[in-house]
Length: 84
Image (cartoon, rainbow, N blue to C red; front, top):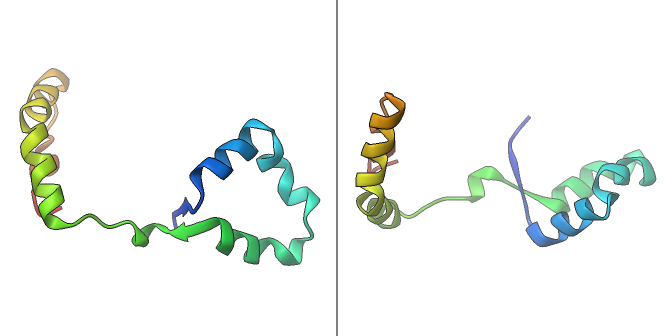
């Protein structure tokens, strides 16, 4: 199963708060489920970050990442890779 991201985050949030998100599959005929999933979600690969943006964020959070790595006693060096 491929990870998906909601196309309309606030619409999904509103439906969840109203309790309709969980009940929707039972209210809608099964044959429409694939279509509705395509309408409601986009593939995760659609979310990409420009290398310059990632490098800027890594530089900004570098000290915090190093402190967290020390606090957790874990290797977070992958988080510091500016290439992603």
